[in-house]
Image: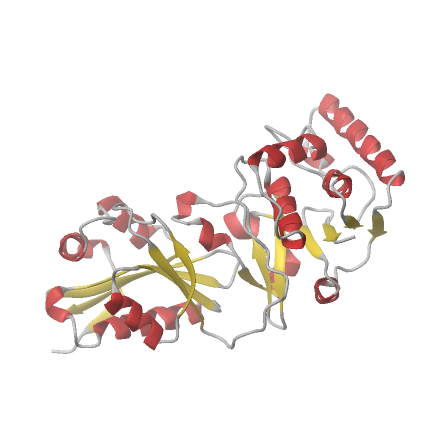
Length: 364
């Protein structure tokens, strides 16, 4: 009897839970996890069945708005091991990722699982990180990656990753990463993340704590000794359309006017309306922070700062400081996200006014 590969359905749940018990002693997926994977996840749960028997499964998750996929979990029944089923599932996961326009597939594997590591490395995966204390039993994990399209060259400048520690400090987190890329021995600390926010916030946004304006971030970087270039599509205060309260609007205008006055007294370079030529900026040592609409990543219509780590003919690569744990993501899932140039053009044009904003840092 041939093995049937298909998407999982709810009727597979009992067999999936039984297989999970057989294959893992810790970090098991539960009934609720599997239901989410089958019905709501931005991904696929593939199963391999032979008659009534479940021989294995693989879960692949797609990172919305990017060209990145993650092999979240794979399991093979004890009686089905040694017959190439793991490779067959892996091949189908890669095919699924390609069908969803993904260029990279990433995964984690226990460092004490040489058989699984050998399987992945035979199939073209490379090690690029060691994650300490990753599993529930405190075991370490290897992080592996495979580009399922052609490989690219990387920059000389390596951008460190720093996740934002509050929901409103994406801009300061990106600025910390940019400064860390240009000054390799610089510490990325929460104390400075919050201090930058205090310096750069517009005070009010649509609700809650205010985010950071391009002008505020540019000034914060300039005060810390960097050469800064500010590129904007418009001069006036940003995001006023999203604020109904006139008192709040007045406060935002006053903050913007003060930022503008401080910029005029600085040597921050300013350009209004020009295109963001990423290849040229990166070639000349620039480290760009770019304002995007987070809708294309999280379906939340809010302004959000990301940092560009690289670009090539096919993709722009981003560090996203927002680690969305509700989507079963880890910090490593938010690093060097490959985004097609077309998708990037859409996400970095915010709102009805098609606002574009970038802050580019250089060494002095």
